[in-house]
Length: 126
Image 1 (cartoon, rainbow, N blue to C red):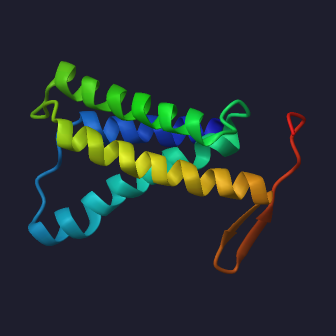
Image 2: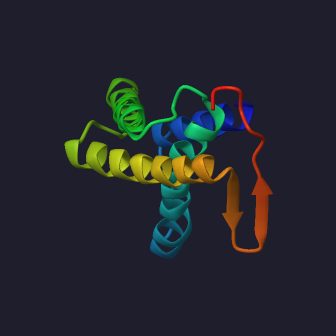
């Protein structure tokens, strides 16, 4: 749970703070993929960290709310960011995709990332 909260907090900070001035290679080669990875992780870790998120329909609602909160914060805080529906849709899709992968890991009771295999502990809600 703490890891998921940390990843969500870092994701929000990355989205709300002004983007650093970087060259195109660093911006599109490092900064943007890092932000996409953070949104993917927020979705992936949600069903693993939160026992109530054990169904795809709840995950889609979670993804929509998460993406909406981030976009709303961008619009409210400003700092060069503004609310855009296309960004909201992209964030929603990335979080939802991560959630589906995390839900699969939860159902399989294991996280498999190449040679890394972590068996999950059976939770009481199953």
